[in-house]
Image (cartoon, rainbow, N blue to C red; front, side):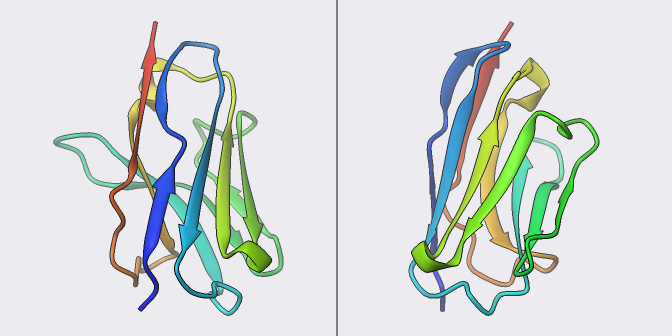
Length: 115
């Protein structure tokens, strides 16, 4: 069973940038699609960005043009480059297989954006 560990979160001011990393304990090469998700307390987890093995991607409308998802199968890693951050981007960010989140959820990484 692949285990996922996210890192790179932090606290920044609006307009700032953060780069999140997700490292898997095993190969992600054959996982058709990986995604970054985020969740705030009291709300459902939402998909922020997805990327397939072919490199096709999808972005949540509110982050399109500001976030970039990158996948490196050789490093068993998925990254989320976040720029022009807004307070509404504040959440705990997770990575997992898409669309079912088939692997155990990692601890996530907290992102806090102050205005």
